[in-house]
Length: 377
Image 1: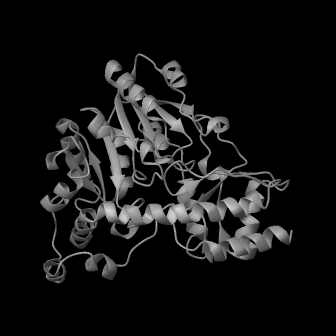
Image 2 (image 1 turned 180 degrees about the horizontal axis):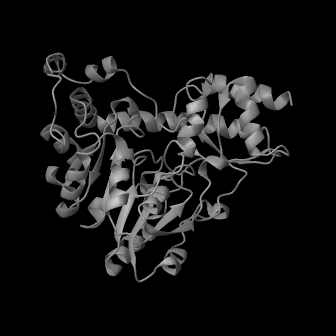
């Protein structure tokens, strides 16, 4: 594997995430305290947590957690689940091991950077297929078909999409699954925002349920709002792939933290309730943002996400989105992510966009500061 390039999003966050007063670009849903999470359990759960030994846990993950994760799928059992220290570790190994060097992969653009830089660094030939910014970031299956090669082994997608909030329609998703099965291509879907679709009809069948060779990647961080647990997983019914991933996990985290696995298990048992709360927060925030951006029709093109906790509106100001985001955080402490964070070497990403978060409570103070900046220019 060659040297990985800087992770643009994390590099930007390293400068501003914990110093900015208003984190208006947060990609996770509203979080929960340990006390609030334990309150969702029973007296026995709370007693068990205080008595939990701080030793190692199985590399695959605890039986209880694997069962709780499997319960979120229709076709997967505990034996089809491998736990990781967040989704990033899962992607790190998966995208290196899923194909051989010089074989071909297709990824959608824009994307979470790891989806393209890791396979490129691993020696794969990678083609980017852009989502259509002029049609609600639609996935064009004809463009996917045109990108296919005899050596194509992987198609990696991220839906609901980060940063656009796009979700393909059910027919497009079914046709993509069918295309992969017919061509012997492994479908990988980063599904970390699944469960945050305001229209239930847009919720896609999970990849690992839809095909016996497909891979679903998920995490406690986004739709459950629990990034501090650092618990992610891969669901896949191909046990040969899971076993290979498990062996390579020995070189990184080895295993997750026992307290995190305990709390993740508890959260997943109340998962529908947690996700419903977070969907309601998003539903409450959308009209607030609609009204805000309607006040600046010459500056912004705004559309709410179809799913997930982020959107990717256009900024029309003459200063450009990079200067806008930089001056905003420097003068008012409001953090937004400029389009450069999502620059791709594989396909064009509109340079006039920025990422805004919609998943946390009470964005009002941040919007007041943003309005003050815009009105004072």
